[in-house]
Amino acid sequence: MKAIVIYEPGGPDKLIYQDVPTLQVKEGWSLVKVKGFGINHSEIFTREGKSPSVQFPRILGIECVGEVAESSTPALQAGQKVVSIMGEMGRAFDGSYAEYVLLPNAQIYPIESDRDWATLAAIPETYYTAFGSLQQLRIAPHDRVLVRAAASGVGVAFALLLKARLPHITLHGACRKLEKAERLRAVGFDAIIADSNGVLQTDESYDKILELVGPATLRDSLAHINEGGIVCQTGQLGNQWYLNDFDPIVELKHNSYLTTFHSALVSGERIAALFRDIDAYNVPVPIERRYTLEQVPDAHRFLQSAGSFGKVVVVNE
Image 1 (tube, one colour):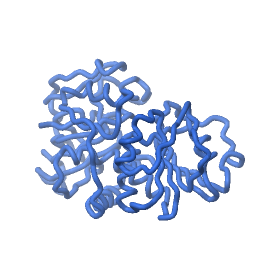
Image 2 (cartoon, rainbow, N blue to C red):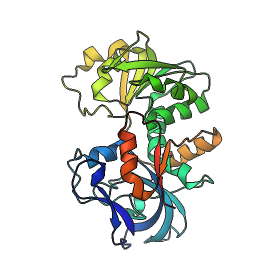
Image 3 (cartoon, one colour):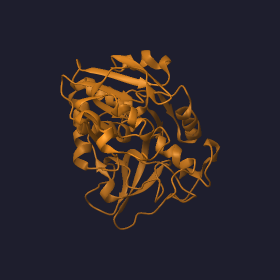
């Protein structure tokens, strides 16, 4: 089968398109024919050598949509449409940057959907992360909501999910590139706030804040939370992994709450609920760029570029 293999950390040129042996089914695992997958920032971090637990060579890819090719359990039938995310795929074992991927049965989730493979490929990791964050924030119709790193894939998905449910809610987005403001308004943001060197260029405050930049800007987000508000830190796009010298008594201002969501907390029930919501509320699933497997290095380059916006997918024809 064809796959993208990385032998050592580095730039996109380290992602090599080549033939590799198709893995054989073993007890407790199933072979999935990969129809598509999204490109994620965490895969860029791994490619750059910032995931110490990942050993090279490795086939990256933490998510996929596809069909069961062969299984060790009768619960998964050949041809069945499935999704898989996380669970050390593309990290402890080879992932989805390939024509086939061997996955533990426990992390293969059957889905029902009539959407095309490109659209399905844009949903799993990104919309699941946005959906879980939405649940953690416990948003009410009267809330004022802010998303930091609004132009990221998760930021856009969050806006689309929230506005589909609550079209009149106040939703602001923060980003470093204000030239993206028009596109952010098109996906549901009511106002765009400049984020300059990790500082929001506004005196406004919010009831709920989705923090996708991470520890690099978390303190500044906490300074903009209303009484009893909630900040959910989900992303780490600021390349800072820890918050040093954090004093919660001082820094959790206004009797506010700090929570998190991690897409590694995968449940079949939440995945099913996500797909039900997307259908029930007719949630748009826009695709910014679509690539082939051979073009994965180009997909990485685009996602890292200043002009990146929304979700980038790879589809196996």
